[in-house]
Length: 344
Image (cartoon, rainbow, N blue to C red):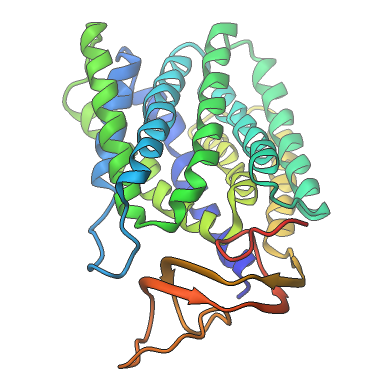
């Protein structure tokens, strides 16, 4: 399994977990304050961060990463979920789910501008197919007149905030994912709770509160852990593009719950998404490239062709410690992971 295929499958899993929450959050968050909803989602995300791995298995976060964690928490765990929650209360779940496609477009563009990540022809075609599939479903939803301009605008704000969050998160993908998710969720949840208190927002009770916590644990906590894993292998742009499956998953759930008008159009849109995912999963990006000497620390194995240093005694499996790479030039399939962020 190539790094691109492995990263694509992980990103799809993250997209599925996030996508199914959008219609559920609309239902569970009815009559609830936007920041109150965001608080419960990211309280659940903190729980979904999972059990910390043993010391030494992952690179630990340091003080130098605190500022970035706070920034991604402000954008991705406060502004974005609150905007989405408010937008969902003023538009249809299907329309909102599909409009989340904009997150993929802006993430790919930001990754290209910010990190100069390469975008091959297959990735560009896949992205266009995903946008076309989303546009078809959006046209279907818009024809039903269930959306308001302010509601859709709020969802757009959420997509832009998450795209900046995705781009800023890329350097954090090489650290302990549990610590990243927990830090982002804890800070974002605290900021959302404080804002909800200042605005005297209504809170949900009973099963609705529990449902939002569970949505946060799976669709925001576990999903983010998987997203970070995909970013390690693919980079920000490719991961964001594959994650464009998430809006389709949400739309499919809404369709399964009874919104089944214009089934032929929905089926054609599904076909476009399937072709796009196939293009991502079968991409083979490889060329002759050179690695300069480098000293760093991250989670790694010794059977990947890049980590040839020795241990006494021998270490088997994934582990993390400071290590040095000697210069090497070779050709093999790769994504925009930590060792392949060279220019093209």
